[in-house]
Image 1 (cartoon, rainbow, N blue to C red):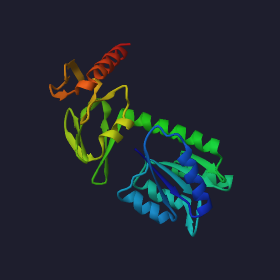
Image 2 (cartoon, helix red, strand yellow):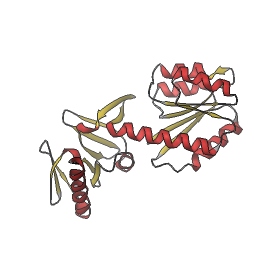
Image 3 (tube, rainbow, N blue to C red):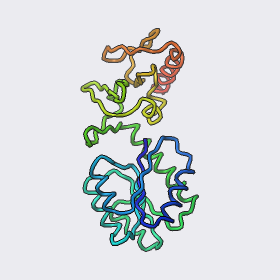
Image 4 (cartoon, one colour):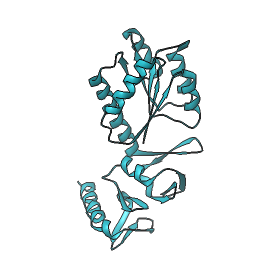
Length: 237
């Protein structure tokens, strides 16, 4: 899931941006949170909410957008910050806080859509090499090649690697949409396996390279076998 934040103190511009983002055809699920004040965004970023994309106004009421961005960067070097401003001169300042891009008000739809497309693709690509999970407000990055499988445990997900297991709050349906479909496949309503670390496919069972056997539901058996065959063929090219 993409976590997106908007920090804008002018309701008119905030509404325009919310509406435009709502019209963009995301390939991933997303959660949009809005803030009127910069200090609220900083507090949220420092606590439970870690945002993937932040639209940050340069001139907030009694606050400087660059100061807010610098505060965010103290605890988060990964978030993609998009500077929003009415003056092109302020956009240049964004590079001092490693901003990904800028948008001039009023927001041009074509430009915004291009920015969102680039960011979504960048985030998806980065997640294909590393899988990010969050446990007790701490971000943990797991190498995708080391992941064996994901298992649904009610409101939690267990992810097993060659060296360890982790549990965190998430859903298997949201996870399936985020993962690289060429590598990870839902083999059972409770399991997603990493095809790279599958040793063989048997009837109703995927045998992993560490010997663990994961169930395959009958209705997904052919789909999993076909996906494994395609993956193995592609990995040898």
